Image (cartoon, rainbow, N blue to C red; front, side):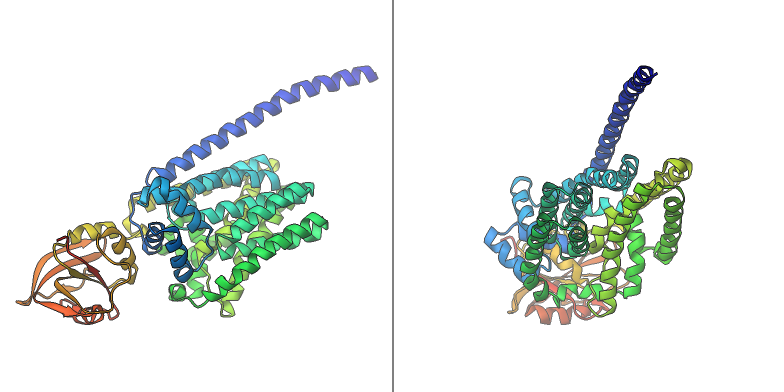
Length: 502
C-alpha cells in the first residue's frame, strides 16, 4: 500500500511538472508580447507631438555643458538631479530632438511593464501580475509620460522597483532583498520628491516586520538620502514655476487624478466630472471581488499594495488642504503600479475568473479607447509649438515675438534658432514684430505696422507685422505696445528676441 501510494505520488509529480513548466512558458510569452505591444505604443509616435514647456526646458538643459546643466538645474528645477544627469548622458548618444530625448522616458516606460508584472507576482499571483502588466502596457497615462522628456517615467520605474524589493523583503527577510530595496528607493528619491510618499511607509513597514540589523541600516541609508535632499526641497518650496498648480482648484485637481490615471489626458474633457464616481464604482467592484473571492494570501498582497497607494494619494492631499499644495496627477505616479496590482488581484481570483476576466477586459478596452481619442483629437495633445515656429518662418533681421501664452516661450526658444534663453532686459531694435495670440483676436494693420502673414496653428493665431519705423524698445515695452497690433490682448505677454540670419 505504501509503495503504491508513493508510486502514485511520483506519477502525479511527473504529470504536474510539465504542466507547471508549460504554464510558466506561456506566462513568459504573454509578458514578452505585452512588452512588445507597450514598446510599439511608446516608440511609434514618440516624435509626433511638439515639446511643451517643461520638456523644452529639459531640452535646453541637456544642450548645456555638464557644469552648465548643474548650475541651471540648481537654479530652476524643483526636483532632484538624477533624471537630468542620466538624461544629459543619454542625449550624448541620441540627441536632444523629440525622438532622442523622449526615448529615455520611453525606455523606462517599457521597463515598467515587466516591473509591474513582477510586483503583481510577488505580492499576489502570476495571473495578477500579467493583468497588471497588461494595464501598464496600454495605459494612456503611462504611454503619455513614456513620451515626455521629463522625470515621471523614470520615477515610475524606480518606484516600481522599490515596491518589488520591498515585497520580496517582506517575504524572505534577506539582507540582499533589503539592500536592493534601499538602492532603488534611494534612486527614486533622487528622481522626484514625491517618491518619499511611497518609500516612507515601506521603510516603516520593513522596520516593523523585519526588525533586523540589515533593515535598520537600509532605512538609515535611505533616510540619509532624503535628508541630503531637504535643502533642495525647501529651497524650491515657493518656486514660481509651481504657481501653475494652484491656478486650478484643489478639488478639480483631485477629480482629475482618477480620470488621468485611467484615461490619460481625457481628464481635460467632460470625463473629469465623473472621476470620483468612476473611482468609487471601480473601488466597490475591486473590494467585492477581493473580499468575496480571493484567498488569504492574495487578499494580503492586494491589501499591502492598496495601503501603499492610499498613502501616496492621500497624504499629499491632506498636506495640500493644510497649505502645502503640490497636488497634481503626474507627481502621484508612484501610486500607479500599486493600484495596478490591486486591480490585477481583483481580476485574477480562481473563484471569480468570469467576473474578474470581464472587469479586466472592460478596463483594457477603456485604455485602448482613451489612447485612440488622444491620438486622434488634437485637444488632448500637446500644443503644436513646432508648427507655430514653422509658421513664423525664418528671420532675416532681428525681430520680437510676443507670446500671450507663457507656456509657449520655452518651446519656441528651442525650435527657433538664434533665440537667447533669457530675454535681454535692455532695448533692442526690431523691424518685425510677431504676435502669437488666440483665433478670436483681430490683427490691426496700419501704415506703421504692415501685416505680413496671419495663420492659425493648433488654436494659436500667428500674426507677423513689419513695423516702420523700427521699434527700439525694451522687451517689456514691446509687450505693452503689442496689444495695439493684435487686440484685445491679455496683459503680461512674454517676449522673445530672435536675431537675424545675416
